[in-house]
Length: 155
Image (cartoon, rainbow, N blue to C red):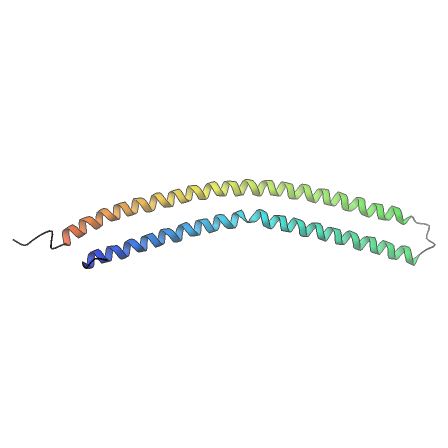
């Protein structure tokens, strides 16, 4: 730091601008990182839904087995009931997979678009701060030149 208070002020302001730039960049990158984590969350949700579907299927099979055990003389075919349960859940899981595949495609496209957007946003941030700092440094030079007594000795 300089002993000239004006230069010191400009140095402090310059550091503040640099810190502000870093904070803005970090915020943009944080948002980008959060967006990129969305597909991972979807994978977890998909897995949970499949587990829930399997548990429901098992519960229905257990219920059918309980009915079968409680009515050994029933003329109803419990094999057909078990097959209907399996077929219903197979259709449900296929539909679920199709839905998740579609959602994943949409999310992947959006993540890609958001990455491009944040790259553009970061370029804009860099360009804006660079332009500001360039202008700021020009003002700083002029101000220091005007206020520096060593540059303007008294006659």
